[in-house]
Length: 299
Image (cartoon, rainbow, N blue to C red; front, side, top):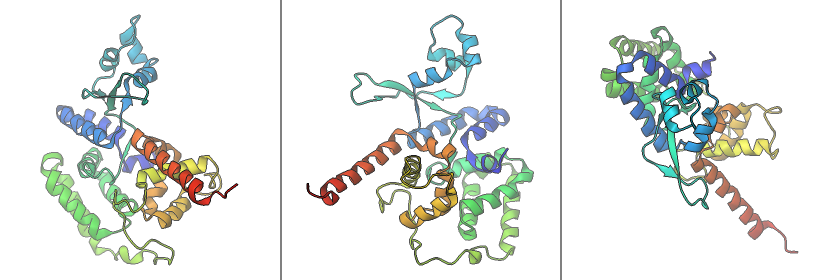
């Protein structure tokens, strides 16, 4: 398994391990997942869900010769899909809304942008790891998501073990985290090894929804993907995501590492929920209006 999926907070894998290792508490875990997905507005319409699973062998074995219903899917694939009584209109012109479902095993990467739930799923991720992997996992998170800001990362680890450790983490995991902190603090300061800030780099830190730019980080990644696919900027066959992330980090103030990881095709398509696609669409409409009002020459 590649390092990205192994050491990232990949919901599908976290759910698999929780279901297998902690069946007695899986219902509570499942409720946390649904709350996070609801907050992030990540859902699937019922008709799309049924269409996607109509040829699933487990579903077909339950369905037999009957017309497919959601009950067949819930029986064949238990503990996977949750409906909280919600429905949405797929299009404004629809007369009736369509039921929506949340997928507990969603192919979704949890990031610090999931601010209300990130700390909890970070702990769930830790307890799903083999103890021998924990040092490498923490070092990976420090470099990739905390940009070697050791002080900030250590404080995060202290707070999450205090908040969730007693309930969710075995004592040996808490001890290993403490030992990793102690050993890492003895090493030469990582923060001092960061590259000097270029004159063109943004000199302020972004918050998730600070409105300094029209789009948030996820929406910016989705816009970059659209620009690459429509050949407005160079595609992935010409330029690596790392350098695209650097360029747009300068232009937007968002984290270079985070943008670089989110604009990978397999990841960015998971960001294309209704909220994000609407935000990108409205931003592009605003650009078109600006061209029409301010740029387009008179005929």
